[in-house]
Length: 287
Ligand code: PLP
Image 1 (spheres, rainbow, N blue to C red):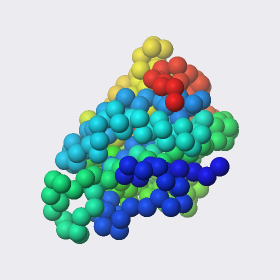
Image 2: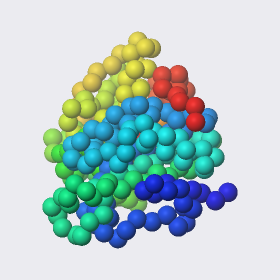
Image 3: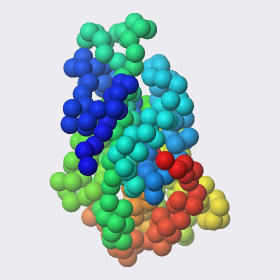
Image 4: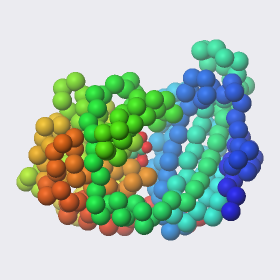
């Protein structure tokens, strides 16, 4: 089946989908994005993703490319046209096309919007979760505004590539004080020896992950012991469990951090239970 992309008002074959070379996303990484999970023909947590898109846009003073309801319709329609049952839908909004100049263009330049959707293999992800992943630590080198989900992902690309070259699937950023901030494209969690779940507060140093928020709801509902605080790499290396969360991975157990085996080297019971129950705590909208 040929894929379809939405580009600035039109549904076009994916292979022909293009934006102008002077799009500010291309020239300056002057844009933001969201990735939502599609699960069993349902879009997961769209309201929360749209709220965060609104936050990213307003922090960068980029206007919505169209009304929020219309954006939501385009997401659903792109999923439908690509016959996505389990997968991801991606939306990118940039400040638009204008002659290359650092200053913002005039207000009559419309933001650009691109939406794509594709199936992913749920069974491959579940198989990965049965063995868990390795993460590789990396010095935090991003700007402080990581609360904005900007397309300026070069530090994340380099950190994740370094992880890959060292046998890992994900990078964990470690700040100058030795604290883990988050993953290259995930939020980071540990379970201490006493069975306490720990993740860093979203007020600084991390993207406020939607999957993280859902897991927090789940943790509360299940009455699990929980602390929202920074944890150091040193503490993580001796944790009972570790895992990462993101729309693309859901709850993914971590079994190795650098050279340290976490717990018994197998996915932990808390991470596995949270993964199993994840969709009981999400907002699901039928496509
Ligand atoms: N942190 C970073 C840097 C990310 O890029 C992502 C997702 O792309 C996340 C955390 C997880 O966010 P979410 O759960 O909303 O996918």
